[in-house]
Image 1 (cartoon, rainbow, N blue to C red):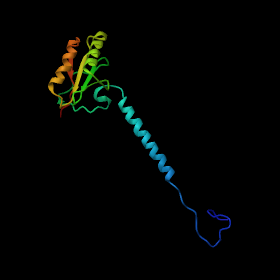
Image 2: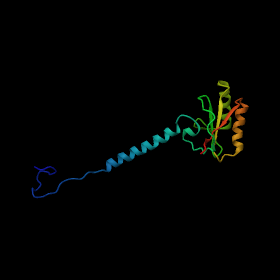
Image 3: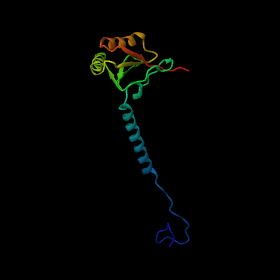
Image 4: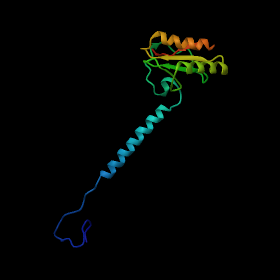
Length: 149
């Protein structure tokens, strides 16, 4: 008896059963693709760090070489193009930003506030963040830039 034949087939027929149904395999791959897409977007939103490190698009202006190195106690505040404030990957209000500055002053008076503002942000918004930090008693301020060419 030959492979691919059923009993009762005529020995003269040369037909071989050779079909593979790939529809279930395709369905499995599509489901896995959706799962990976959803989990990767969640991971990016909950990523560690703040500001641009958390997957936010902040188009920093070009500047000179970095003068300071960020410490773990430093605060990085991102100002988005639409004027929203982002702290540790979360959008915060002006009042929440003020409270965070006050808490940082209590923990470490030498905390450096790094303002990472988009190129399109009005100058007044950046000054507003710096004034909030100064009112809280944080006098060490820095502006985040990307390295120039």
